Each structure stands twice: as structure tokens, then as C-alpha cells.
Image 1 (cartoon, rainbow, N blue to C red):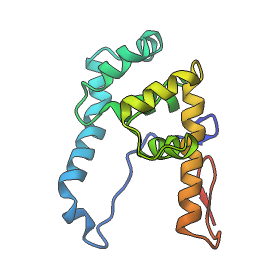
Image 2 (cartoon, one colour):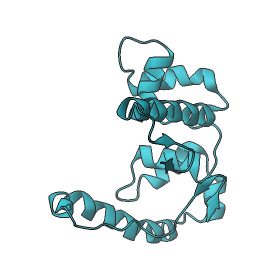
Image 3 (spheres, rainbow, N blue to C red):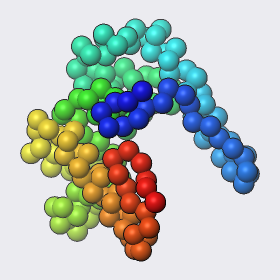
Length: 161
């Protein structure tokens, strides 16, 4: 399925244990599998139908989604921006966004979530767009630092060689 320019898969990601990473990260993977397994049923039993999702206010929707085990504010806010195309959502806890705000606003410190929210008030009613642009800029900057030869570059939907 496609949402805008982003491909969306309904299947959970597959893991392989070639390096033994699964056994080292067993707890994290178990939590992730639990979230993948319970999220659809939790949405159905919690009354979160597509129609209801469309009618809830952003704060109400974040509160409803964070009641599902394994889904926190960052995931819920990201779902509002990406999956539900809400226009006025910000991810104040996102590290890439916080670093981008530090760079763009020339701060001498990494802003706390409250400071990001205060700064983001100026972006209303398009905070989702501003969030996307700043995070994308931070990812591009990080990629340039990680690979100065330019062998990889980020696009909106994938990393290209």
C-alpha cells in the first residue's frame, strides 16, 4: 500500500539471527513482537475504528494510542503525522528534531521537549510539515557526516546507492 510517497507494509518486519543479535536483544524484540501482535486487536477492542480515528482530536488520539502496550507518545505522534496526515503535530521528544532545532535556532544546548514545543508554536498550523522538513534535514546532515564520500543519500522513501 502507498501513502503519499511512502510505501507502507502491513506485514511486521522479519528478523534474522545471523549475528546472534536476536539473543542479545531478546527483551526488546519480544516487546516489539508483543506490540505488533496486540496493536490491531487493541485497536478493535478499544473502539479505534478508522472512522473514530478521523474524528478524534490529536490529543485524544495520542491518549488512546498510548494505552496500547508498546506504543508511546513518539509512536503515536508519528502515526498522526505519517499515517493520518494530521497537519499540526510536532514530535517534541524526537532526538533528530531536537538537534535540528538546536542547529536552526543556533542554540548552545539541546532543547528540552518543552522548549521544542514553545518554539514550534510559531510553526502553527503547519507543525507537521516543519517537523518533517527539520527531521529530514537532520538525517541528511547525519548521513553526510557518516559518509562524506556521498556513496549513500537519503530520499523521502529509501536510501539509494
